[in-house]
Image (cartoon, rainbow, N blue to C red; front, side):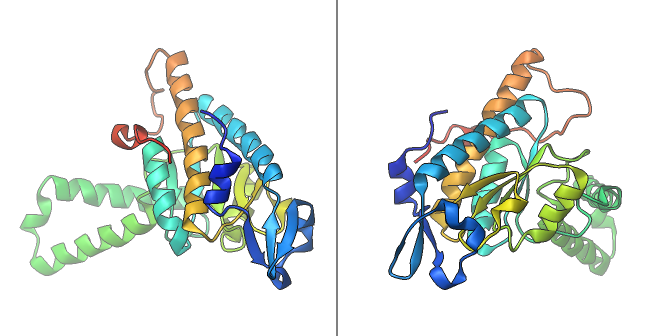
Length: 255
């Protein structure tokens, strides 16, 4: 996949940081200028670091690992879900539940319960239950899918996290660090990039900026996974995550 152009980054508003009084001094080296009380991100550095993150994601995916994409703020929810599905990755776009990584066995138990109830429903078992009980289970499935639906096929820790808004997702980042899972993140001017393995300086509030970066990294994962499959003769490893790229979404042309 070709590197993103400076024009694409500018059009998506990736260069717009926060108001100057909200800045984190640790982001100073990534700030190009100040305009009308807003910090402007140095997009030359953004491009270089984005390319490095892209290559890293590609390497992770080409080794057979999956990426867990995390973005629970309103602006990130749709881009994270859509790009994860398009590329066959995991995602969390509502709320990070404590222990998702550091206490994965407990989380897996809850996911197993969800999958069991979905299987019961698909077999038509709910029609034999009292209406009140069936409705209760339907509501529970819907609620659990909101939190677990994006990674319920995950049977092992992800190869990396991609995070939007590291301040909001600090628990996810802390868990990843404890478990030794590398973190790639879109890092705005109010953040501390020192907590991130692969920081990408840029606007983490504008939906176009989030979508552009998420799309680029998801494409890296898609390409890496394709190489992994090719090296295995086109067959997935037994026990590997069942989530596969969505062919319809994968064919979409990047804007």
